[in-house]
Length: 294
Picture: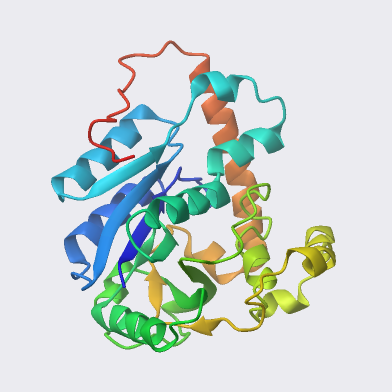
C-alpha cells in the first residue's frame, strides 16, 4: 500500500509535559519499536524553538538511519507576532504539521499516518491496522484507537490491545488518511482547542466530544453543514497504538487538571521563548537541509 508513518516532534510544554519528554520518548521509540512491514518511518520537527533540543532530536534520528523533515522556528517571524494566541499557535502548530505530513507522504505512498510524536506501535497493533485498511480499500480515513501509558515499560509488556485500567487510559484516536481524501486539518485551531477533535467531528466519528460544551465546540457543530467530509459517518477503526508517558500522569487522568496544566504550560513556554529572543544567538544551528528531504 505504500504506508508513510510520520511522527511530529514538537516543543515540550512543562508543566503539561515532563522536561525533555520528547527526547526521552524518541529514544525509547528508536530503541524498542519493531520494524513495521510495508511502512517507511519518518519524522517532522515542528518549530523546535531551542537549537540545542532541535540538534539532539536530529542526532537521534540520523543515528537511527531515518529521514526527517522540518517546519523551522523562524525568529524573525515570531518577533512580529503581537498576541499570546498568535504565539501559542505558532509554537504548537499541530494541525499545520499534520497537513504537511499528509502532503509529504502522498509524494511517496498512498496511505499516510500523520501521528503525534509520542506514539508507539506494537507489531500486533501494526498488523491489525494494515489488515483493516486493506479490507476497506475504498475508505479514505481511518481512526486508530490510542491509549495513554502511565509508564513506557507498559508498551513492552503486552502485545494485545490495551484496556483502560490503572496504567492505560483511553485517548482521542489518531487519524490515518488515504490518497484522495477530501479534507485537511483546520490550521486555525490551536493546541487544546479541539484541534484534532474538529477533524473527527467533520468525519462523523462518535466520541465523548458529542457531549462537550463550550463556545468553540458549538462553533464546530454549527460549521459542519459546510465543512464535513464526504466520508462523514463512514470512517472505520484500524489497529491500535499507545501514547508514551507525558511526565504528568495526574493531568493524563483528569481533563480539568490537563486543561489547567496545558494553559499554565503554554503561558510559561511563550514567556521562555520571548526571553530567549532577548538574548544574543550563540552558534545558531544550521538548517541541516542537506539531511532533510524536501
